[in-house]
Structures are given as structure tokens and as C-alpha cells.
Image (cartoon, rainbow, N blue to C red):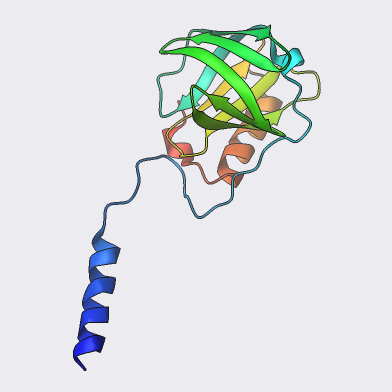
Length: 149
């Protein structure tokens, strides 16, 4: 009986533990675009929407040494190195390519820990059809769409 009480108490404590920070449901598996081609992402992007960070400004991605992208963006400077198909390391943090349209006009990146997602576009105006796809992709990957700015 004492063991049962200790087990029940441990379960209650575990359920009270703080949940990790983030804007997504961690129980939802996060996808990655397997055919992502870094050389096609090397360009100047407008950040048109984001979760977990203030959107706006531009992201400059410059190809450096194979598939490594040097990134300069508001609050971010560093390298994105490939970890696997559609999986990148941005300054040691795993980021996934959730979606890119076939013409590389819109790109959605997200941190695996759920602390941010960003929507990059080839101009400041995201067309309605791609905006809808972005919402669906973020939702599919467990992000809280109420946080999309």
C-alpha cells in the first residue's frame, strides 16, 4: 500500500512539472522537407510572419562551403549546416525546413524545440494561397496558430 501511495504521489508531482517553453505541441512529430536544396535558399528573404519572435526585417542567406548557409537576420547571425534531409543546425540549435514551395518563393523554418517558427518570402507580400499553406503546415506540425504574427 505504501508503494502504491508513493507511486501515486510521484505521478501527481510529474503532472505538475513545468512544461518546456515553446509554441508547439511537442507530442506532434515535426516533419522536414527531404528535398531541401540550400543553394536555392541562398538569397535575401523578407520575414513576413513568425511565431515566437517579432516578424519583419530581412534574412540574408549566403552559401558558404558546400551546403552551409551563412545567415544574417534580426537577432540571428550564424551558420546553418545540414544535419540530414531538411534538418539544419543553426548555431547548434536544430531547425527544420517545414515547407518550401517548388519555386523557392516561400520558406518555413522552425526550431525543433518549438521556440520559434519563421515564414520567409521572396517579397513583403505573401499571396493568399501560400499564406493558407503556411498556416496548414504550421498547424500540422503542432504550432499554436494564435501565436502567428
